[in-house]
Image 1 (cartoon, rainbow, N blue to C red):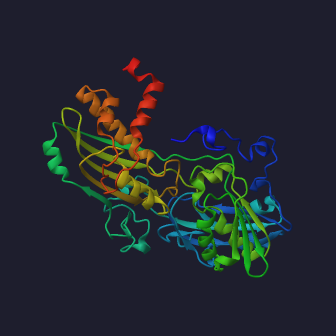
Image 2: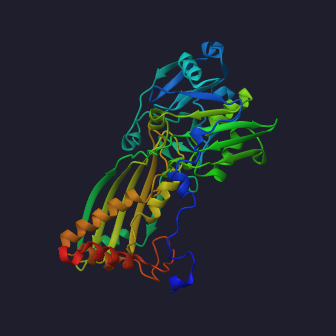
Image 3: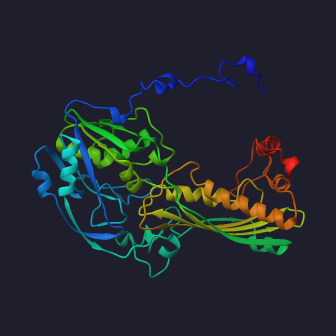
Length: 435
C-alpha cells in the first residue's frame, strides 16, 4: 500500500485546471465562437415517424437573398455512416425513419435568414406504418424499417450480429437447465427500462471551415474527436490527414456526444458554400434529433439453493436501437456478457436482441449498457433474498466474484474489490442498525 504523504497528486485533492475560468465565465464554448465570413445554418427535420420522401423542393429557399448553400442527400459526397454498420444517412434519402431526422439544411448570412429559408423547403411525404416498441417490431407482420438492407444486416427489424450472422448475441456457460433442476428455489420476472434523454446545458453545435483548397477544420461538441474524424473524412471524401477536428470546452455530454450529430451536415454545407458554417441546434431540435439511452425489455429466471447459493440464471434482453444501429450492438454485447452482475453463477444462458424502431437513435448515456441489466439483476437478488428470508447484503456477499474465480466469459477475476465496496456502503448506510 502506498502512503499518501509520499505523493504530490495521488490521494490529494487538486483543483481542476479549468476551474477558475469556468466559474468566472472566461471559457469560450462553441456556441460563442465566431470566425471571419461565418455563415449560419438551419436544419430541416422530418415531421413524420416513418415515411417515403416523394420530393424535396429547395427552389424558393435557394432564391432567398443571403442564402449561400442548400443541401439534401444528393449533395453529400458519402451519405451513409455508422459505428458498427453504415446504415445512418447524413441526410435522409428515400425515406425518413424517425420524427426529427435531418432531411435538408441551409447556410445563410444570418440565423434569421437561415430559419426563413428552411421554412421555404417543401418536403412531400408518403406516410408509412410505424412501429415504436421493439417487441412489436420483432413480429413477422411488423412494418419493415430497413427494407433495402435485408439479409446480411437485418432480418425484418432485427439486427443481424456481424460476427456470427445470428439474430441475437448469445452467452452459454455451464448447463442452465441442469442448474435449474438442482435449484431449491426458482424465481422468474420481467423488467423494462425506458429511454432516457441526456440534456447537457450545451446543445449540439458544429463549426466547419474549409482549410485551403483541400482541407477542412471542424470544431465540435464531440466526445470522440479522434474516433469520429475518420467518419467525417469519409462523408466529405477527404483524406483523414486533411480533416482536423477540435473540441473546445464542452458544456456536458454524458455519452450522447460520443456519436456524430451536427458535424457531417455542417461539413457538407461548408464544402458547398466554401465558407465557414456554424450549425447549433435549439433545445427542441436536440430533443428530437439526438440519441437516448436504449430502452430494454428483460425476461429473467434465477435458480438458487436454500442457503442462497446461486446456481443458474437465464436471461433474454430486447434492446430498442431506434431507427439506426449506432452503438446498440456494442451496448447489447455488454448486456449479454456481463448482465448477470458481479455474481459467480455456474450456469448461465443469455439471448440478447437488437431491434430497429421508428424512434431516435440509441446513444451512449452514463453506464454504456450496464445500468439497465444491473437494475434487473439487483431487483432479482432482492426478490430472492425476500423469498429465502435472507439478508440481501449477506446474499450478495455469498455470491460475489472473488480473486481466482472465472466469469461466464472465461475471463479470470483479479483484484476483486466488490466485497470492500459492499462493506463500506453498508457501514455508511448503517445497514446493521436498519436490517
